[in-house]
Image (cartoon, rainbow, N blue to C red):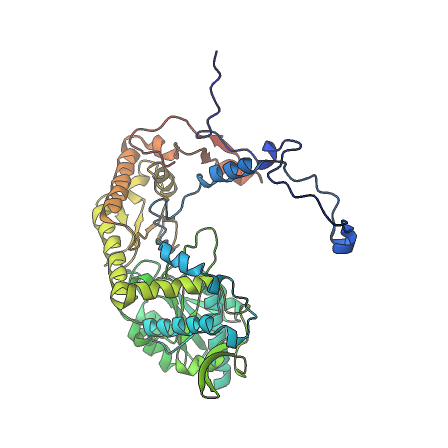
Length: 508
């Protein structure tokens, strides 16, 4: 009888320690030709540990195959559509990666003297100028390393400016359709938060805003387009109301993928905006980073930006760039050195590759794709808010609830069709929300596959709801028992079914 070889495709992968065999190695060092130095002379004994059980003993191919198999469990934007609403998971062109890995960028030490880092400084200056043009605001700081840090930095700059005026004020107004990190950033900067209710279309209620604005208001923080996917049509009037009361307007630019090349926040009256370079400008940010959240500000706010600033100067007749630390009104550093430099390289590469016309086309395509999905699904799922969506559309599960199927079930069933689930249950003002953002990366064929999958799930919810409620079925690990997870600290999983389910393609 011939024993079949082990097949890994439908098996769970063990720990690398479980593959360990005594004496197995993946390398061999040459014999020492000098006397070995005592380890105590190389490392402080206080830093040494004797309680480690030992590292796994494995060959090179053991390690390569183990981590390669684990990598096939992951979903990535290079694998398929990643429709996370509000996250803008677009494709990152490989040219950007190649440029970011050029030795002059990747191997440059952050303490390199200015005169030896002119190319790196020139890249920073050129990116600042490009982002200033895109936002319509004259000055940019690239230092913040994430969107939330950009929010915090923008508010710190606003507070410093208001202090210089003589009154830092105490209130931050935040619409209920803004990003969830906005109130946290305001609280960190010492402001009390007051929520502004949206109207039925998800826009800021102007009368509510007028009643809320007074001499204590330091800043209005708004997200435009909002997390509801809607453009704030009264943005100029909103800014005027706040400015007349002596406050400033902060715009969360996380959704700039709907505006780049078409309109500019600075032209609307916005005082500060942060940009997510790892979203709008194409660095992939799944798994938690890296990121970059630069801020663009008005001329009045420029003196308060973090230092150092890249400035031009003439030395002995030669023009050059340098980092300027002499900024007496600055809020100080918010990040070591110049931020996540490789993300900045990718962003400038993306901007220069597309150019003004290409950036506008990307924006228009992103908006078109979202509206295409909305058009084809509006008769199958309820649309959360009436109006013209921008870069994302929000559906809900009202029609499916009568069959006992909810948003979470729909999202898990979508995995069986080979798609990463959309953002669910956010924003909080849209009960049962399914937030879908296709970005400009997806062609019509991929959008049609997604639409067909969502339509099929709606039919399944009506005809065979248990199939949807027990999904996913085609994954290595089955559905999490949320009830058990809520009762116990340890998560309990039930094994996945090995057979495929009718109507779904295997996502692996």
